[in-house]
Image (cartoon, rainbow, N blue to C red; front, side, top):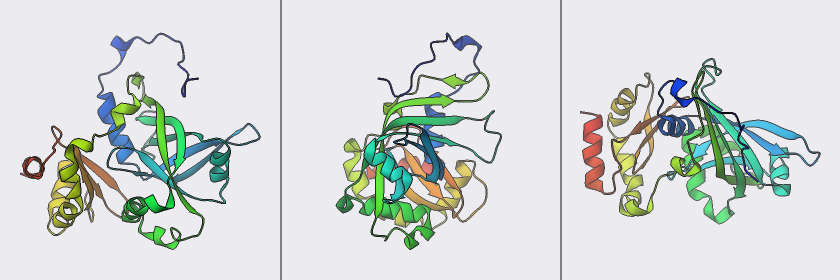
Length: 246
């Protein structure tokens, strides 16, 4: 059974406005702080909530929840979920919306250190609840993607694999990532990168790096800078960075 059932209607792609569907989908996922998360209630009805969203360097989305929450109990009974991200500051009917459907997989407690650090970087107040005894993290294993780009811009061509980033070929770079992030935050690189991304003014910080770009954050906003091509070494990274903030 498909995670998202095709509509079966023929779409005239020639009538659609041009759109970099994969680029839009990737940026939407990485620049949204919150998501709607729908689970299946044992009564047969969908149960939807709004929750904070983080995305791992490889492109896998993850969410936090308390074990006593309704959505956590629903996932324990049936891990199938769906989540949607959009720019809620605009009329969402005329701007892109991204829906992912798949399965929620609980992250073992001894594997959550990086997720917690990433979560606190994005949501500093989470220190108040991440220490709860029933604190849980779930990764969303995406099985289907639907991008609605607005009028005449539906895109069925984006796949779950399109949202992922290969970290294995850049393992040496990723080992250096914490030190690189700290170095970038010691100067004005984050502000210059935010300008490069078209983001507004703010107290920007580099929150993470990966082979395809740099994630930036303020206490209330996110931005993403994409490299022209993937980097796999420290030298490649420095060259790509120089081009962005030249």
